[in-house]
Image (cartoon, rainbow, N blue to C red; front, top):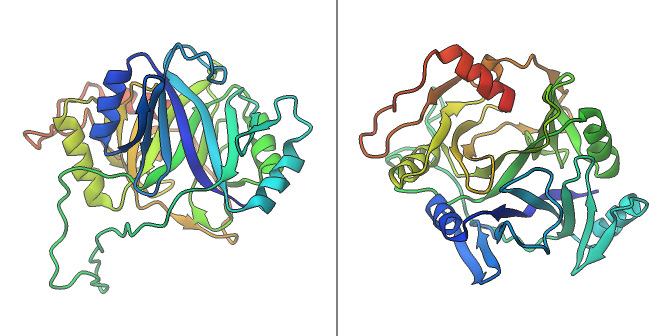
Length: 322
């Protein structure tokens, strides 16, 4: 159905001023601001909207407190939008307004679909020199003094019904399973040829619903590090990172968010094609992170912050949240 990625997301927050500073420090730019809320942009125009928790015009929340209230997905043209209308029209939650086709998923999360307004940008990262393949010659590696996210790359939610989520996203929306934790987690991509996942859903024994994290794509590993250090220096709290995911191969750094859950800088994920065969993994710490720094790196000292002990149970807890 030619969904191409995430067009924008909407958060509800308790403190607009605090969230404003958070997302500016994160590297987003303000596109619109008034008493009702603030619209931010990533580098390519992908949007992040923040609204007060008391805003009654927002779609219903799937959890208490600050959280993500809507995810709007991008399509290329009117023909793609028409295909989605046909696929979703029988749902009780189906509707359309302002050029956005809307429904809710089995989690109760509000979804939208619209013709993309994202723009092409030159966001190439710094080439890496590997043995026998020197891509950077007579050019020093870049040091970033902060991050500037290219776009919202993927969203991650807890769900009490993973089977219903798989049925909805694959049959109704045309998503493709990339990998899975059987009975526990599902990695989905919206295009046959693309990044490892655009959405991940995790089913916990508690039946919890809600946002786990929103991931922002940056250009390269150096920007994950430079952005994370700058964000730490600005006073924001690391949850875990930097580190590396063995399943998607991506480098990451997670921070706690005033919009609920976490936000992630990430880069260097696997790119898949229709030839890819989904794999199955046990949900355990070493499948969440090949390596990771607990508590992050202090932006001033450039040294690891003291992580809690013991290490293994903490990482196990993070694997459960992922």
